[in-house]
Image 1 (cartoon, rainbow, N blue to C red):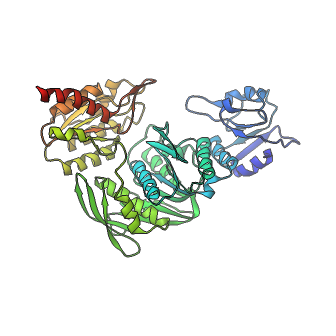
Image 2: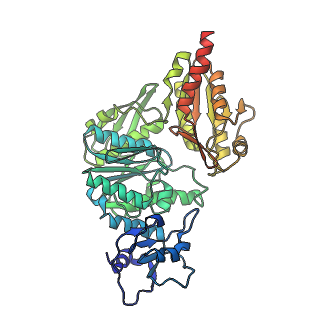
Image 3: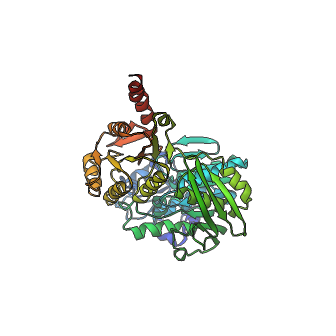
Length: 498
């Protein structure tokens, strides 16, 4: 590729070029990680959270970079190679890595799902349905990445950076995969990780308070989520939860909007919801005039929304409703999403592990638990460190309002003092209701299980599927479900033997 072609591709993203008089060098490849730089490569300088690669300009030139892309002035008079100044280096990165990979999304049917809660369940269920239909589908998400047959669990980010995403898409094409379904986080949209992509179907589940440590305001967070709909292919579809999103806020440049929800105006309308411990039944009316009975092993009104979203997505891809519903009925769920620890049942109470880590998700979790439990709800939860502090007292208030006993404990404190995080949550706690503060998560879970009587439910929230606690820079092995099983095995079995 010629450097002039790069400038052409970037279009009005380019602000200025320097050191280009009479030259148009060939570019071997495009890189944004200095460890991968080879002679004659084009390097994209990016200001990251912890490091700004603009400061490496002289070293990059010395190592053979043929040109640089930058978004801020390079403070050196020693740079002789061409420099392309752009409005946003991350957007340039997304566009150029996708070009380098030959736009693999054009050869795939792509589905992107955003929203505060529900992304993982929706995308995983879409993949399950496609697997049932014997379609080859890659998946990118919070719990697992499944790329062209290779699985990797607990990825670093919900949505990978642009270079990795381009690699995943290209690999899927090379392995003759037909579908690519992915979670799209607000961070990914704000940081242009998906700006080089286009989607056949883009879906949004809901937008509630989260990540206000990163976004300037809730309004900014909401607007960022809606940017996904600017990335729809010309013949694409938008699938929108009409009960939670103002349809008027979605200004489609192309494609068609399909809505779902409980409201009468929804294209896919949920009715007659019935819930048990083993799953749910509900009716769904489709825009084609039919009403069909749905069974899912998932539990909770929020999961009725998720299932409806999947039906809308799959119908948008021209699959038959009855076959979609049949495939959904065999889906057993996502690890750490309202997941029962079955080993607890023999002791006469229930234990549920869930990923809920926002006020809205915690409220939905506890409301679902209340519909299933005859006794008390004992809630064990905390809040993550280095994140939105404002949601902590809100979660405390929700915990007090919708559970009977609250045990505050450590989550992933990261670089914060765990006890300060707990104090933030405690501000929202109703002091007239029973609650405990036990920073050690293992001890907190143990106390919660000890307090449980017959027909009670212990709900352990915040971490779900996660395998490690993050304390400072240390990853400490810790999985809530496995910890419950361990405590039940060691402590409760010993008590029974007595």
